[in-house]
Length: 113
Length: 113
Image 1 (spheres, one colour):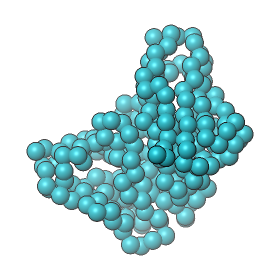
Image 2 (cartoon, rainbow over the protein chains, first blue to last red):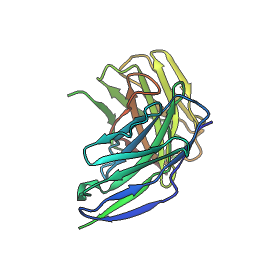
Image 3 (cartoon, rainbow over the protein chains, first blue to last red):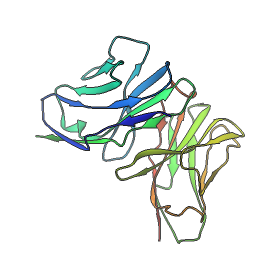
Image 4 (cartoon, rainbow over the protein chains, first blue to last red):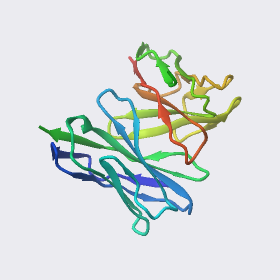
């Protein structure tokens, strides 16, 4: 069985500042993939970033980057230069090579102007 | 425009009635999924399908049924056996399981009274 834990239900960041969202996971598979999805108030789920476990280099997508610590089973998302449009619910998710996607419970991020 | 459509956006039913939620995709994806989202619960997998005429139970399949007669369509029926059907339902699709990004529809909010 695989699990994803997002222990912080809510976070807040000042516009233009940097914020880090935490995620830990557990899996028995050696080949797996990690994702961060964003769900804005419209409730449309959007992929933010993806990390292959076999890659040592942390994934980056514009203002979004991850800190992937494989030994610690940690996968945090860093948002730089936060914008009002970043306010949303963020879900960490995990899938093994032969399994389905497992989501964390999500974290609500608010951005203060 | 390629994407996933779910209809209707809001659905109201009386207790004891079966109801079918529609999900259509024109992305030529093989895999399709149904998730349920409740406050504080994240996304939980109901059913998924890798190919036409084949589908698998997810983590919370009881009280639900699906069909996959066409590649483009994956309707979900919420039966009267589902004890707590009021929720937000999300459909998704991907090229395959595991490593592939899932694309989500806009969701259907089902209210059963």
